[in-house]
Length: 275
Image (cartoon, rainbow, N blue to C red; front, side, top):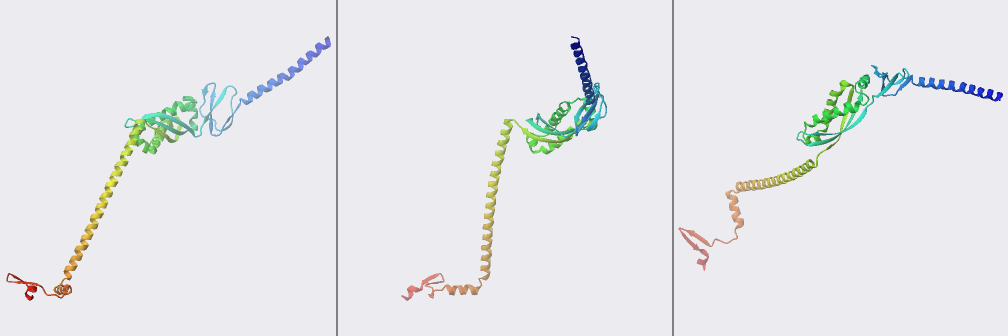
């Protein structure tokens, strides 16, 4: 009995020797892991100490921090793409459903102030409302048809307007692409009818111009022909001297004398006299 009790106590002592160092090692590892943070490339780290946001940011790399007391929020400073679908009204009060692709980035120096004042959801809190507001203001300057033909101007206006609203907060818009404009069915039908009418008008104008051109060409041809004939007649008249006329008479004479002569108001048939 006594030997068995001694063995059990010895085993208990051996377990404690293993467990306690192991727990201590795990605790040290946890503390060590919480004493460092890695900020990935293209990001900055915002340090939060017991709920208070520190000014300044951690650049990419490994940084030490107070375990359990401090946490690091990573802010992505690379170009980010945002797609926004919104409705606006044109200058002629047409409803325009617009799909936009916005490229923007967060200023590294202002990452902490954005997180402190706005939080991590700055895209939905700041960027999306700004896009809707600026787009509606610009769309109201153009008619629905002008919106289609002035995509570049609208895109440039969006970039300028968004940067005016967001730059001071630390957000920079680099590019805005208009993916699509959608209009009401009634407006699309009206545009198609207008295009057909314009094509028909253009066709009628073309046919009219063709007829006018042909008539002008024909009149010019007649004029040229008449001028040619007049010039020819004038040349003939100038060439018809008395000698030429006499010669033409001789060429045309068939050798017979005139059968009729007249004088003093009397006409005599010479041919019948001989008979």
